[in-house]
Image: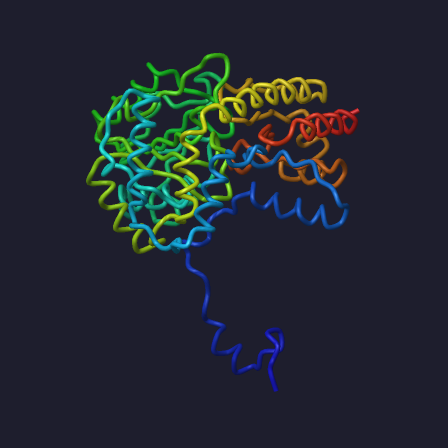
Length: 403
């Protein structure tokens, strides 16, 4: 008779009782994704949800990218493996994108196409750092930096930043951390939307080069800035920096899982070997779509204009809802709000507060604990990447809830 899992025999239980998961896997959950699961449960119960938790542009992939993917899918040739580095045409086109945006020349051999920026971070961290190396990350900051580094046995040196430095690290702050092997920079940053001014960005890169600190520069929100602010690339200032970029944000292609790495030849060669073993290659059909997306300039600029409108709607709506304690974002599509007037008055921390908003308003946001385990209990991140109507209605419900 077949034994159901919960009815396993004592012998089976005895044989497996000593088995466990690895220590490296015991990282904190990515709360933005955890909140997404809670949101899906809410939809199954109620039939609706106002989602402000993910950085997922509602525009989706550009039309030219969708057509290219459809044509590739219908073609007689199989969409098989590409090389681990990626399609040569896409890598060459990425170098032209880098030249057009930053005035920097690199060779296609210095580009690796990855399964999203997430895949790029893993291979970059593995290629650049050994177990026990010390890598600094700013908090609040994207949680997967520290979680991925920790899972790889790399010491995470958390650098608490605040409004006094516009939520960005400075060379003086780095100098106080002792020996470092690496620094993860993000501009525009998640969750604050801070863009580091080009001169300040260059000073950080120069300090790292002078102290043999490898910079991993997260540039996935480039192209999404406000008020004429410019995002500088680490490639402009150093031949040692490793840049991570993605088709998910500016190009609106989150589910396609397509990103890229650019940097020193030795690092890209190492990443190629690692990717060949870990993932073989990025999805072929996504690479075809990405190549087309790089020429979708007019549509992408219309999307950027929509982000400008959505930013205004979100800022005005949060202020009207009594959630106006934040620095307006320079870039990306997030507002990182101080909710200390609600914590612990109406909820013990930001996670509990987000649960209340979900249960009582049908509004889903991401708790600040995702981005700052120490101070994030009093902050919440709202995303304005979604539809304008969702932003307006969500803020209206939060305003009604707070009365």
